[in-house]
Image 1: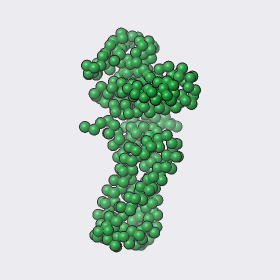
Image 2: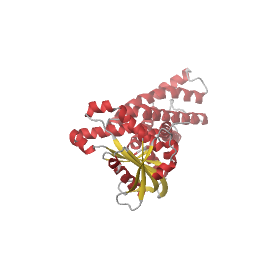
Image 3: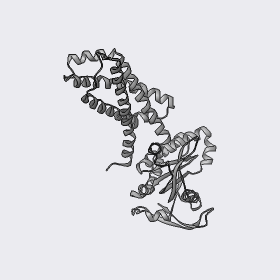
Image 4: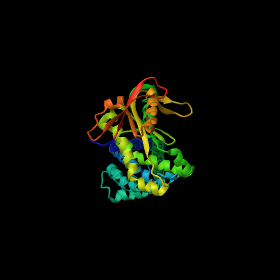
Length: 361
């Protein structure tokens, strides 16, 4: 069974294959139409037979998926701290060299299919040399560069607004508001005001960047979705089924705690402090939909968000790192190693109804 992280990586890589296939078809048919309309058949050009079409389609999908895999699994992380324009520049240089290498491999096989000879035949080699000095080669490079730019642009947009959000926009899932049951985790850095005053604005911002980045693996591993970053607060959400499965929402909290514990020495050396946080968890019905005129967002509305924020705010009162509503506790099947303790029934600020709250160790 695939892990949530593997599933997420696959879902991020597949669009690269789709982008390259669609743009590859557009380029293929455009070049074929131009040749037929002008009655041109450059000596280096490959005629599009059914076999060549299938080979070309499979080849561009494979190249697209390779670009996606390199981008998602390696290159994206390598240039993660560069600016948007720098990322695009560095990546274009790398991928141009990579794709030239691909052309040197793919062309002889495509030409061999059309001519029904070995890819290493002298005829194929001469044709390839003619291709490298033809307008067809220049056109191919322009097409590849465009496909590369579109796929890298998609990658950067996906990274900035979130892959899940981008896919929801494309599919129109939330174009009309829908009601759904969700679990929310509101986390807040402890003593953030004092930390900000001690570090200064720039260093505090650098701390927040590292702090949030360290949570990424835990959130992905336990199927969470980042809903919002609000100053030193992060709001994580799960579809109900994803959140209760294997107690993902609770395990995510403890995994986030663990990563900060493991990096405590690094934080101490870099910033002079080790950040930690408190969190509140609750579940309930929300209305989910697209909103905004100048800037589109997918947002959740419902009392559950207000209630979760209030629950998180009581962590200091009870001197605990985590508070969970009774509603969520009842939906979970926690393993024996989780020690659940009641902190009592409380009336939340601004609410009439009372909530039974629990902490977990």
